[in-house]
Image: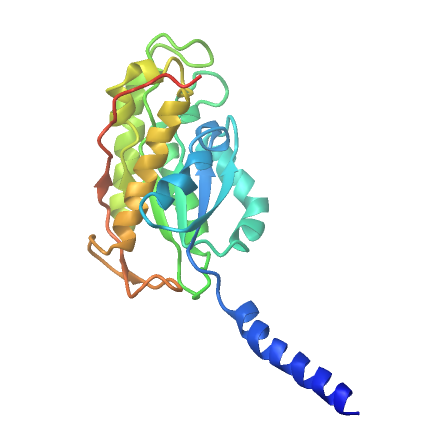
Length: 255
């Protein structure tokens, strides 16, 4: 009888230790990455490490869709938003625009692009993180489309990125109080990393560093605006349409 009582007591002690631990919210942040092939094939694989170098623990989910324009990604969210929302992201990173400047049937006008982007942001704004707050939304400028990129891009595609797409992204970010991350300038300064619309691995690393710098800045509370509360991350994260861009490191070829 005494042996049985000791076993029960031991089981209760184990439960007292482990059950609260199981209920405790996981530490770190959750990041959902939305975009086209530059997301699906690119920077998210480097983002967790880039955040780790800044002392930020993170889980990163990749929801890139190769070839998607804003029109197609918005349609994708009609069926996928519910599942993505279950991740309870603290940050949503949106990188779209490259495919919108194609000259085939995927061509999207500047006016429609801005409208689609606003609608995409609105979908993600309905998400809630583990604390029940809205996630922080960050929008990135589209990288350059090199001149001479073959069909389905055309002679005017490169200019549309600078004249229409990126100004629209920045305007949407400013009007909606989202962050704006400059993924254009670092790659424009290093065209050797962008032989076509998809960067080399080092180019994707630069994009990841840019995103990480923006997230870390928000976590450190250096911006302005409304506070966002995240579990285990201190008091406040600030929200403002701030431009972030890391200083480019000397390029080295990655085999």
